Image (cartoon, rainbow, N blue to C red; front, side, top):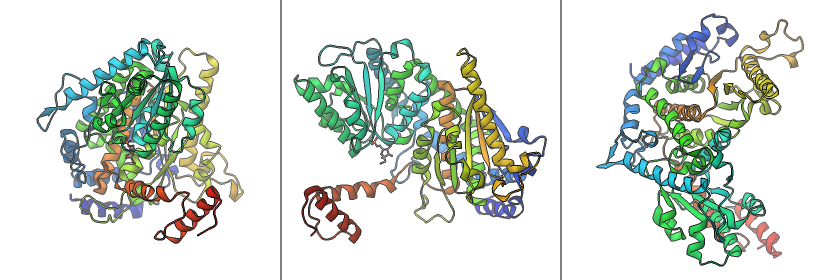
Length: 542
Ligand code: F6P
């Protein structure tokens, strides 16, 4: 069946299927069996999605009509599927075992990947063994990752998520993440750091990102004020660069010995598996980092080879396509019931909205349907006390992802274990009430403002345990889901042209900040430039 026919079939189904309420669908005793899917340590429960077997079948036909199978093969085999930048998107090649080989333009890139991982391992081990010494000869005990977007969110999310997996040698090293352009994070952090023991990691694929270079320059000045050893030596003791543009990092002053590389064919938001994950390797050790890669690689194999009807990324993507394109649901909440995953929502905001927040298709035509919804999130129990009111009784339909681990606090004592049970109960309760509304109660409330309409669809992802492998698989699940949706929408998920104009405009405006504005901007911008000029210099408006 071709795409148009499959799309029309789904539209026709919508007329009947959208009238189903989840409270009716969940009457089916086989519902959980039918709509939950397992892959190793990860269970994907779609039973609270507003799907029926007929809808799922039609969605799978849509995927077929979009040649999803060929696209998946194109992704893994390194075709230039990032068509607007004429390059492949090979994040999956970052998590292949060392004995594999992968030829790209006559070069075995798997060897390149593992050579860089070995260089990274060497630097990590120097830090863990306290052999990396700062300008005064004392060992480094603090690492500051300076980066933004993909050079910040992924490593920060994983470091926070897997803190309990740190080997003994890593405990002596504190890790901080700095991203904000305005210097607010850095200025307060530097007050508490010892320059002699601090190592900065400048993480930037392009090595041109203004935010990162501004923070790196402030860090460099701070070190220069603390030590009078010659600049090249100071930078060599206190900076590592991670980039796909080593020549730019060297121009900035970094030593070639301290540069870790990755490649143009890795998108920034898909790069935590590369040397951009340096901070992760410092936190959980190289063995932990390899287990993270292995979890992602297992999900890659599953995605590449499993049939659509049992393929987790495909099923997750299609359930959301149904919501977005056929049930008119345009908001998506990410709700981890686990404080360790506090940064997962921010990470997914970039992964999903920077990848699929587009309205022009691969052929340059305006798309005729909705694409990526607005996505946001928060640790679930905290969000219960913030925005769940809207989820339960607001006028907006929202799809939710609940993410939770079955096992936690193995031998940490009854008190923490009971906190975990409390969290699990809250997670299940919220998913149930969102689906069923007040029909979950024996007796529904009589007053209108106490009623719950329910029928808000949700997905529940249950990990056996939050381990490096499980987290690797979870992230790869989301990466591949995003890819499947891009195929259905016929958009390129691997570029981000939409963020370029703002950067150019900031460069144009910079010389006018605090100065008397030239004519030529719009009236609102000129008005603000005038105000700024007046407030910062005390001069009269132009
Ligand atoms: O401006 C958006 C963006 O290019 C993201 O795609 C990227 O993750 C981020 O900036 C940081 O880029 P870089 O790693 O090149 O500094």
